Each structure stands twice: as structure tokens, then as C-alpha cells.
Image (cartoon, rainbow, N blue to C red):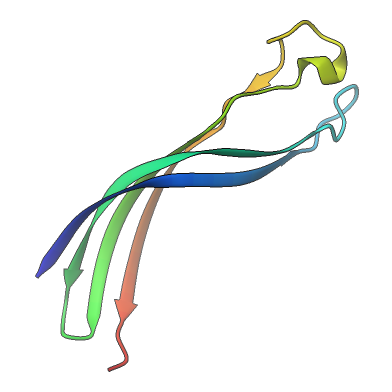
Length: 93
């Protein structure tokens, strides 16, 4: 049998960007956002399943301009990720 599913929810990530001068180590921040996606999981036997999942995560915009003395919105980040997972599971019962 095959299980199809969708997912959605809250995401949190810590970012740490090491850059050369004049920025240096100031780009170190936490950001929250959302994740959405879906997947398929298929039973290969009574104990083994294999699956494929896609997930998109987007985090809130962060403005670092004032940290380097630049005008607002001249150094910003709005991180996002696309993730694909392929996996296998074994049930021990």
C-alpha cells in the first residue's frame, strides 16, 4: 500500500555567516518561518517502507544594513530552502 501526505508548519533556524571585513561575524541570527511539502511512502513488505518527501521552508527577512552603517534595505537576507528526502524504514515487530 502507498500513503500520500502533505505537511505544513512552523520552522526555526539559526544562521551564522562568516564574512571578511567590514562585515565580519555580525551575521549571526535566529529566524522563524514556515514549511510546506508532501510525500509518498510505500510498503515494500510488512516491515519495510520506502519514501520520497519534498519540503519548502522560508524564513523571515532580516535587515543587517544598520550593523554596517549602510542605508536601510541595502543588506538583507530572506533565506529559503528546498529539500528532497529519500528514505527507508524498518519496523522491528
